[in-house]
Structures are given as C-alpha cells and as structure tokens.
Length: 55
Figure 1 (spheres, rainbow, N blue to C red):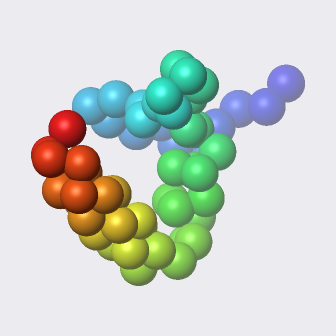
Figure 2: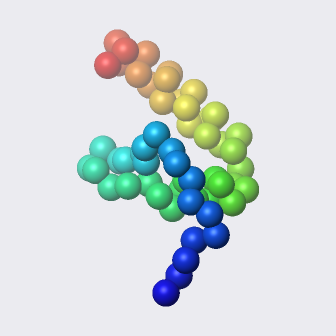
C-alpha cells in the first residue's frame, strides 16, 4: 500500500472538458515540471477565447 509523503489542501482539481481529472499533470508540476509552459498555455487559451468573442 502506498502512503503519500504529504497531503495538500487545494481549492479543486482541474478537469478536462470530458470530466477527467488532471491529477497527473498537476502532480508533475509539483515535482518540478516546466512551470513556464503553464503560462504559455494560459495565454494561448486566453487568445483563443478572445478570438471566439470571449466565449
């Protein structure tokens, strides 16, 4: 049985549009993945939303 090293309280776990939890990508970020990529994708998403009239 695996026991986590620590348990963190967070406001929520992000989900895909189909409802799948994004636990593994979040875990990788906490383990030191390239955080600057999040900023890139956040900007990309913002630009795409603006291009569709802010939907």
